Image 1: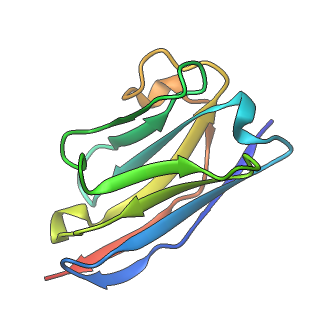
Image 2: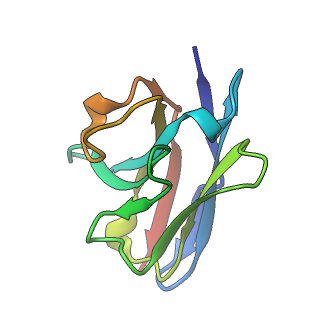
Image 3: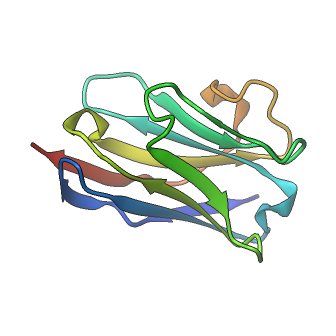
Length: 124
């Protein structure tokens, strides 16, 4: 069992930046593929990014490509989502998710382990 805890959410003005963190208990991220998702009020959960364990590559949704960067720390203990040039459409609860093997990055059913989410609010 892996427990994930997100942090770093908050209120920011449009154009600003935030960095979210996701920490894992009982396991390091070296053996896990990690995804970031978000869910805005009244909308379905949306895939944001995935750091693939197998390929070492990172994949992004078109809506965040060029603005968001997902990364791991060298110790593989924490995963980050750096969010720049935020706009009000980025307002959502952000979740990190993980699993040992993920074949469809954007499908939330691909991930067994989920954090509790952290709120990001972008004001105009």
